Amino acid sequence: MDLAFLHPLYERAGPWASVYVDTSRHTEHTPHERHLAAVALSRDLAGQGADEETCRAVRDALEELRHSSEPHGRALFARAGEVVLDPPLARAPLADSAHWAPLPHTAPLLELAGEDPVCVVAYIDRKGADFELRSALGRQDAGTVAGRQHPVHRTSSLDWSERHFQLRVENTWEHNAAEIADALAVCQEETRADLLILVGDDRERRAVHERLPQRLHDLVVEASHGTGSRLLDAEVEQARAEHVRQRAERELERFLAAREPGDDGRARAVEGVPALIEAAREHRIDELLIRPDGPDAHREVWIGEEPDQLAVRRTDLAILGEQHSWSARADDALIRSAVATGAPALSVTPADGPTEAKAPVGGLGALLRWK
Image 1 (cartoon, rainbow, N blue to C red):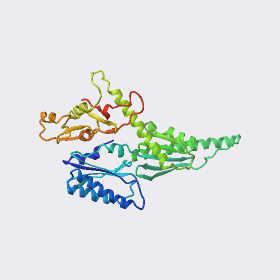
Image 2 (cartoon, rainbow, N blue to C red):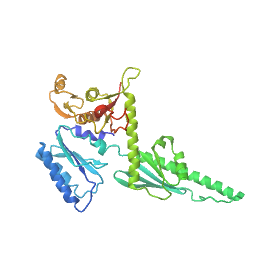
Image 3 (cartoon, one colour):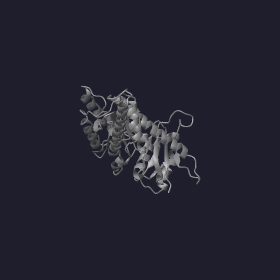
Image 4 (spheres, rainbow, N blue to C red):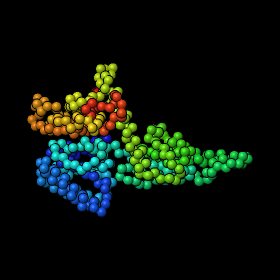
């Protein structure tokens, strides 16, 4: 997940209110239920020590969502009476929550807003294709390709003229498949789609797939539906979820391999809070990996005013010359450091297996950069 959008949160001093709300339910009672949630969450913040102005800002922002049709949810980050950032979520939180802490509680975004692959669904037939853009926020038309219209049907006759006609049919299919592949490649480049789903008869899907540029082959999923069918939201979501799972598995495999020292004696990955804090202080985190159920995620660390001022113990910051320090969650402190150095972060849920089941150890790890 690219964390650049979080920069505004670290350009201001805390403490911060961090709120996650579910907007996935839509009934006649929804406006009243969301009003009650706004009141309850602002009271929760006040009980944790949040100032009155920030509680009011959060409550007002939540009240504005009473009639929202957003399909999943929203996160709110506020301080000093102002909502600084309110990104939409790609999936609904398990429950509404509110946090008041020195740092914004951004770790849940890796699960709720991160890795939201954009898909282009291509509905292919012998005459052309319709493209549809799908994301967590819905669907929209992404264009149409109209190939050659005649001839497109085969015949069973065996005389010379009919065989010549069949050859023209083959040429028309190949021409149309090439046009569709070219247009799909352009559509992917313009939309930056992470996934291309091809829908249609087997022959037409394969013909288009084969003609796509090599760089796109790993992004393609072929759906086993007949010509003219439309994918259900659940089917697209399944393809998107599988894409996210495979990407996380690849990064986890890369992390596991990088833990072993290379020829220069240096490991390209570390895990555990002390090693990660050392890497963050030295600006060596290249990608942060967080396992949501890991026990180290909520472990207490100590932070200073700058993103690279963090330590396992408060006295360590004093030794480093930091005058002011606050306790914070390890995952939130490391995310702040990653944002400052331009490193991405990824939520990983290891597959079952004796080696992978507990990686990274404690739930926090990183791939490293070396000069």
